[in-house]
Every structure is written in structure tokens, then in C-alpha cells.
Image (cartoon, rainbow, N blue to C red; front, side, top):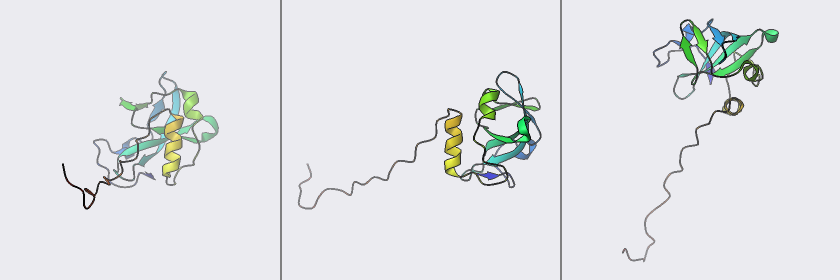
Amino acid sequence: MRPVGGTVRTDIDPRDLIGRKVFDRDGNKIGTVDEVYLDDATGEPEWAAVRTGLFSRDAFVPLEPSELVGDDLRVPFERALIKDAPDFGVGRHLSPEQEIQLYHHYGLDVAPPPPLPDRDFGRLAGTDET
């Protein structure tokens, strides 16, 4: 996961999210979007680093269940949960392990790994096909 800096395949430019006010599910202001992180594989916006008022630290918030309402970003989580999110710092790449920690923190399912390739190499030599 990398901070925004390139072209993405979405109808909303993630750079347009930077500076937007962020509100929790109860309408409480959390802070403002400081950075947007893109999925390494798809280039889609996946995380927002939100500058909170508490000690001016950034908290990572998933963008998938969040929505834009007017000029604001609404996230379906409580303020306390967001402020307790793991702090990985901003401006650096999020590792897959860090992403998993964040998904678990927010109670979101992580996609299972792709299935293993089919290992059926055919019938054994000397056996009859029936």
C-alpha cells in the first residue's frame, strides 16, 4: 500500500479527498484527510490517513465502507475506534501485515488467499480408466 502519487482507475481522484473533513458514524468530526493510500495491486484508493485533533496524529481509516456526503467523508465507525487504530505513521508504505492489522482492528473481513492450483495430474500409469 503506497501513499497517493500516481494515476488511479476510479471516478474520484483520491487527491480530491485530501483536506476533506471526516465524520464518524454518529456525525462527530474526527479530523481531516491527510493522505490517501492506494492498493498496490489495483491502484484503487483503500485507506485514508486522517489527521485527528488528539496529539495531531494520523489514524488510518478504510475507504471501502466510507462514503462522500457533500464535501465530507463519512466513515461507519465510532470516533473511539478510529482514534485507537494502530499508528504506523504516514508517508511510508503500508505492509500487507499492517493492512491486516488495520482490517482486524475495524472488524472487516480480509479476503482469503487465492486457491491453490489444481494438483490433479491425471490418472496413475497402469490403471484403467472407468
